[in-house]
Length: 179
Image 1 (cartoon, rainbow, N blue to C red):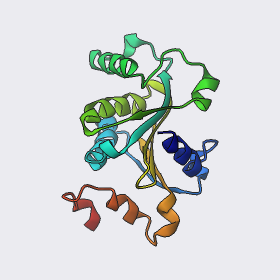
Image 2 (spheres, one colour):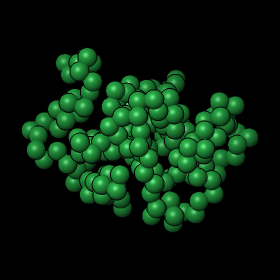
Image 3 (tube, one colour):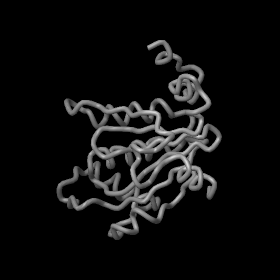
Image 4 (cartoon, one colour):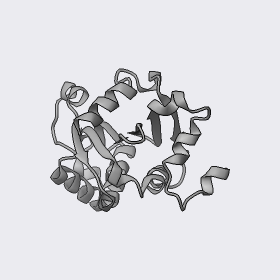
């Protein structure tokens, strides 16, 4: 798992993610309707068969939003994330930017990943969350407010960077390939 953190630091410029040499692109949903769910669903559904090959690298705390403003479901998500260690309460700002924790994932974690992404995208947390696939040399960063960014070392080795993303897709799901 230490290799995952090294790979993350190699692929992503932690001082400015958009300035990363290996930045491929991002998905950003429009702020209408259930856009938070749309962004989360796109990410989770796309990678759902590959979470057993991924690790979660995160440094996250609850944001300044008080629990009183969370729905009952969001409070439940927050408690679950804290019990897993994925969110730590009351972390200091400098600690958020310097100390990351690494957690192995498996396909049974899909609902927990979905819940964590929703908390992040809705702005109920503060910090950083990355999903790292060592084998694919792929990093996905979930951003607050509607977007998902993708980074990969293989970017230089492919004529078309989108080929990398499609190769990460489960074999039975080729629908996006023709889009």
